[in-house]
Image (cartoon, rainbow, N blue to C red; front, side, top):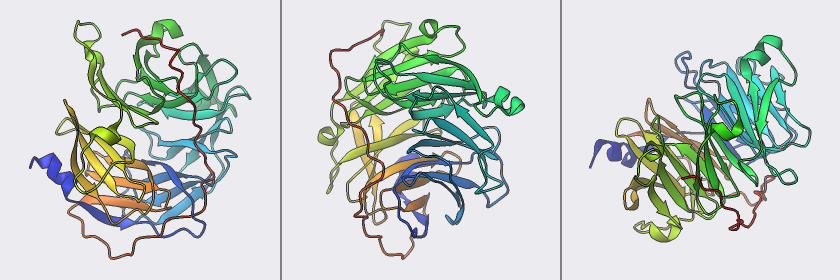
Length: 385
């Protein structure tokens, strides 16, 4: 067994969060990556009750909570150059910046755009210079909105320093915004229209910024970069998967490395099955992509992305009791955080001693966050590669 496979196969529960008094779905998670005091690394979780909760990663004890959003939260992101700042975006049309040194305090900055904009995704680039948020469909258009973070901090402008918008590259809700982990100008966007667009935001116009358009032929639920490479992968709401290599753009080779119409049917899992795909993680040392899926009863499957499909490596069991919604992979200590609809947050580490805490019963109450579902429009196809 390869070393990287062994790391995943030996993942065990190191810590779990205490049961919440008011159970809520855990929808998005992020973790501090910049230098912090030993034992104080923070984890942020966006919950279905419109709150952002802070946890200590080492203990998974809740250390604070932020309130302020009036609509479902579509993401949380720590600053990548300052561990003290945390961003959250919401369908209420705001992106809020919080200071993690003062849990419970009001946002230190609020970014807004047009009142009609409902944010559905967002990200901040690797140098904390630009924020981009995607919107749902407004009349006939969907928007990607940009702010200058540095100007907003300097001026303390309540609405942030709005740079402009892209409005011509998608024709339906934008479900994913993702900057490259080391190239501050490269940006991915995914949409219900089935397209994944790649931009160089340093260009002057939207048309010149659009480098490539990849068509998944299905509503995009998740897209990301495979580490610091220029390969991108994408998941759909009906469990399709695709992997593209942008390095082949200027060659005669196909950029499509792998495309799976339905991972539930093509992925063989001994003694189990696959109900959905959650996201992915990139193992920097092994230079391999791992796709994470699960079952409706909380089992987590780790799948290696190979040239001929997704290969089951191992499963994480006896933890979550319901659908797993979010994950975060730490490339430094090879730990995994998972959260879901059972209101539980788990920390997995290689070789950890599993806890003897009983598995929590699945929540029966419906989520306050209902995902929008739309029929993919097969008539619209904009393909540049």
